[in-house]
Amino acid sequence: MSDTAPVQVTEVQDAAATARRRGRRGRRTVLVIGIVLTASIALLALTSLFWLPYAQADTSGTRLEGPSDAHWLGTDKLGRDLMTQLMIGARIALVVGAGAVAIAAVLGLIIGLIAAFAWPWLDDTLSAALDVIIAFPVLLLAMLVVAVQGASLWSAILAIGLAQSAVVARLVRILARRVLGEQYITASRTSGTRWPGVVGGHILPNIAPMLGVNLALQFGIAVLAEASLSYLGLGTPPPNASWGRMLQEAQGTVMSAPVGAIAPGIALVVLVLGVNFIADGLRDVADPTRRRS
Image 1 (cartoon, rainbow, N blue to C red):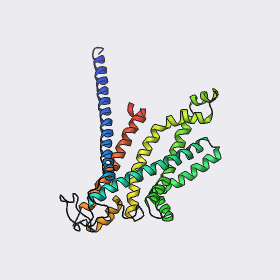
Image 2: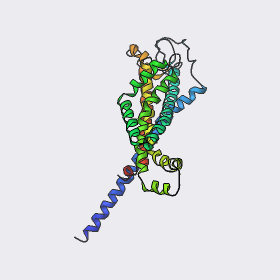
Image 3: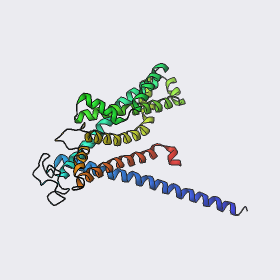
Image 4: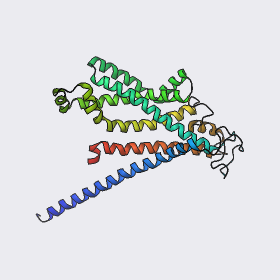
């Protein structure tokens, strides 16, 4: 019995080490896939800044033409080149996602840190207000803002960013209060460090990994929200192309010219999946408990 016990322990350790290696490879694979998918859309958007197959408002093509050498993805019901619209839509999706996340990050950090440091009554008030805002879907809040401001690219960015800031603020509040309860914060304050130094030296570096993961997820949500707004006619107005409006315009001809609906749909799925895969990979890096598991 004593001879077989060390052998069994060694086998278990080897199996655990193999499982850890496979887990690390799996996490790296997910992260790499996410980067490749997102980079493909980013490359499409970057190319549109310097080169487009046709002018944005060019309607010289045959209506509902199939894919060909002249029009790689075909044309829409107005004779516009679908590849051109898809490339411009990629640019708009990335601009909206980045702009909305930037607004949400700034407002969320400010409100979340205020709530974390506030008196109990103010903290409860802010928390209740954030919960009420979060209870409404992002798309609904964005529609309300766009209805007031008018449909435009910047209205969509502002609307989505404001709607997402409540989610970011609540996360920042939770993470900041957790950090404030640590003993090294007390030691830092005892040594004479002022609260701005505590925020910049301890709180922000500690909440940055999880906050980055959440912002990556919010990016994907912002892209979907912009596509939904454009589908409803509340997003980027013509002549700027948007994947959501491309889907809306192609729904009446999806049987005769399916590429008009399939192309923006695939592009939307690729970008959102890529960003979510990146967020999942970053979560494994940021959370030590997931790495150990």
